[in-house]
Amino acid sequence: MPASKYELQPDEKERFAGIYLLDHMVNTPTSFPLLLEDRDIDLEPVLEWMLTHDFVEIIEEKAYAPSQKGKAILKKFDLRYRDFLSNYDIYGAIDLEAGNFAFASYHDFDTDADWHEYLEQYCWEDLRVAVAQYRGVNPVEIVFMSFLNEGRFGKDDNGWQFDLLLGSVWDEILEICNTSISVDDLGWSDDQGSISGEVVIKDIVAQGSVLVEELHLKEEHDVSAEQNVNASTNPWLGDYQS
Image (tube, rainbow, N blue to C red; front, side):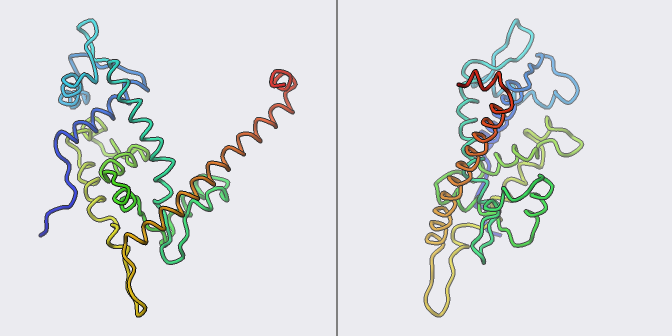
């Protein structure tokens, strides 16, 4: 059996786990006592790694809390995370035969349920790993971010604390990376010749970039229109804005 193309080194897993826990600590917000209890005991190796790398500090000899360095690291990661949501998610559902992006119809649906039902159609292929390959981005990080976005950590009875280092969620991430459509898979041949996967993904990314810009403009237009409506129906707001 050939070796897996993508692997997750222990230090890389610890870094991802540390970022996940740092996000939880900052945005919940919460701290953890030095003497962990119940399921939080599974967090001990992650917290120790975070302490060694200055992601967290010990306050009043009682609890772990995010350090200034940790907050700066999280802010940097959040920027990458927003970039992922804005610029990679659209490649998660593409009809390769028709050349269509599911997100081109995103604003046609009134409810999230209708939108998700649309995404469940058989025609969509997930090309986020291929796009990451093309852009020179680590696909493992892209899939990790998608798992964060989808709330995939802690989906079983063991809880998210167990998943951070020991759960099978990391095996799932690697399986996705190693079985997803790659750039090479996109190449094709016929009687007229052949087209490399590199050419195909370049065209897909170009189309996706245009779609991302259109979606952003649509969102900005909708926000502006809503603000105008609020101003016209609220005399106090209207006077303030004028």
